[in-house]
Image 1 (cartoon, rainbow, N blue to C red):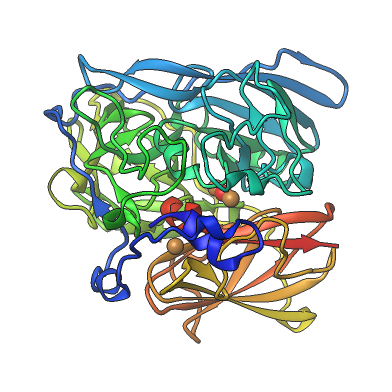
Image 2: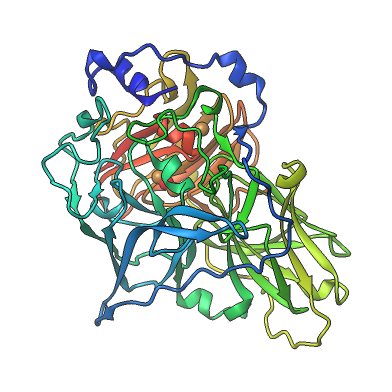
Length: 525
Ligand code: C2O
Ligand code: CU
């Protein structure tokens, strides 16, 4: 499957020459797969689990600060990383590491992040979950072209027949460096940044373009939650490796000059190596105290059901304190957590519920063989004081009022026989908006699916008010920016866009679906 074909069908972006006959996998074949994606196996021996210490991504320091703003710089660059022991993997990185450096900002302070592109390809940086003005949001055709490119040549689209058409009026290409401004008008939350380039988000993220961005505020800071080394961000991502150590990815065009994955992977690419913070099946020594784990699923297509094994006596091993958009009103205990691509679950685990010396595995009940393991916590036997607790009340979460909704909109996420992955029947056309919500108005948005689609909305978080005609599910609490829909499900959310007018996207966060056009613009006005 190939996006040129999808876009060609629409006709307005690409010329007729783009209508190359490319086989589209039969719906029957895709529907037969109850789960998204297909496993791509690695071509080299995989390491034993639980040998490598959990890495902590570097913290990004501001290069300068003033009364209102902290200024950061990130160079996007190729780096040769040792991900599998003794193997070098060429990665596309933010600042030379995978995950990229963690950006930590505070409510009310503006962060300006200047990105410099020394990669061989254009990039687009999106702060996922960011309440961001449109010109800094990482619109997929607002490319940052590599240092030294010519702005007028068909850069970023060179060698991509038809893709030059993506340089529509809304595109704001820049060469070398560009600054993204994040005004910080949002509550404490675990956000992440990643590549969002038109047609290439899947391979870009797969090769390493992802990092954490944490927002803190006073409300969170006043709570007695675990902090410091006991506040851990865990980026969980599956990958596959080729015989030469490179990331293996089933691109139609291995040089990535033109987008698309080979036919069998059109429903998503699943790796056979589970990385946490860029290390395969790592381990971590933990004290017998509470830890805060900010879980992020940064996989292209793989959903997980995360559980601790063994479960602590009495269950509720994972006490959820936050979701995509920050703290919940009150904690929710779970034995396991279903996490779809791009979702975040902020949980507290109390390792004092385990005997000293217990090896507690974080497992994936949706995986099999090696993908059923994620990482291991080794509980120490020394006596350590725990000054953290999880209070019964966490944060003020104002419920949006369904009766205040001024509009109801339906978004159907479906595979079309001729156009690939679509929203309301159409493949993505940059510049063509399918909704025009008014700033400040509450709207009811209804998502429905054929297959498995994690649905993501830019600009503002939403609240799930119903699932399949009933109550929200166990993982729908709080402010969300990504909601997981299984096959033939329907989810209702309330959303209110604030502060920034402009064009944003909603899309499926299965990155192979996204690249294959399951995205749409909406324009806030
Ligand atoms: Cu995490 Cu529009 O993306
Ligand atoms: Cu999808």
